[in-house]
Amino acid sequence: SKSSRKKSHKSSSSNSNSNYTNTRRRSVGDDSGGGGDEGDIFRIARCILLVVIAIVVAASITIARQGKSPFSFDATKIKQKKKKKIQKEATGARAGAGLKDDPGRRKERANGNANNISRRRFTKEDFVIVDDEESVDWDRNDLTLQRTNDFLTNYVCSDDTHAAATLSNSENVASAYCHPLLKPEPARRTHSVAKTASNDSIKNGDIIMVLPRHLLIWDLDAMRDPFVADQLLEARHGETGNPLDSGAFLASYLVRLKLKAGGLWSNEDDHYDTGTVNIGDQDQYQEKRMAFLNMLPSYQTLQKTHPTLWSDNELATLFGRLTPTFALVRGYKNMMNSEFDAFC
Image (cartoon, rainbow, N blue to C red; front, top):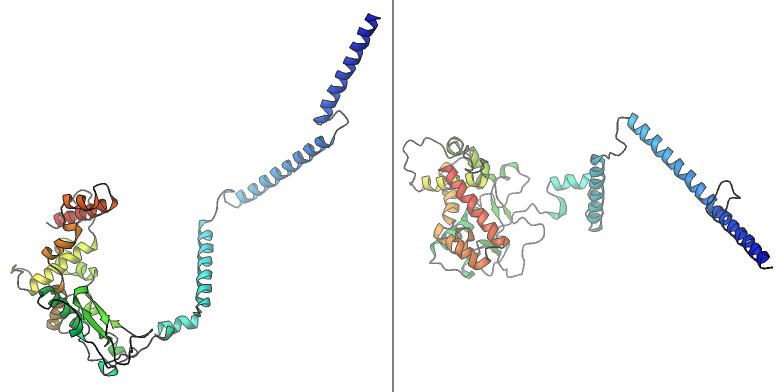
């Protein structure tokens, strides 16, 4: 009986092992078995993957035949799309503000009519001014402030020959103009708006100032100057060999103009002409220029307030040696010293 029980036990355990093995095979999707839901899912996913791979390969072959890389992108088109998007957003913003940007409006702006810009140039007779230049607080014994006041008063604003003219007249486009309510603020080196009896002021769209070309001194004027072009234009930084910034040529040009106008340019062989801008009366132009050049602060004046003229110890005390400000000022100092050495 014991032996029969052992045999029956072995028989039952072997059958259970066989059933367990068959169950595992079917559970993982054995093709030879009866199948199963999970096996079907795997087969479907495999087929889908093969189809996707086939589509990608076919598309790559087609693009390659057209001479393009299947993984390339057109940066120009992307930039154009971004530009169009920005323009669309800007147009929407302008439309929301009541400023429709269409060809007609652009033509109006070109003619000076858009955004209610007034063509009229006012005169002092158009206003009853309550406060004037005398009401501005500044040290009238300070020579630098006296020159600054002269510049702010006369350099542009003294030209009242065409004060009542309109910008549409081509003869008067180049004439200087200041709104009559502008008053000089020498201590601040700018203008402020004077008060009127009727509280009238400068309105939106009014012309405040017209600064014509002959009153401007550009770095282009400096680089066109015969002396600068002949003597300085080929100067290079000593350590790098890089060309100098245009501001260096403008500075040298202004220094030479001031020295010549003050009779301090002693080189008798200097045959260069400084009148690079044709404005008619050269004497009047020299006088106008000197009003600007005399207003510029001296080295001693700038040394009190301009960090590029301070010593490294003073900069370190104020800003710290390891700060971005200290590094920035030192960079400008090194650049100016290098430009000076290049000219020498």
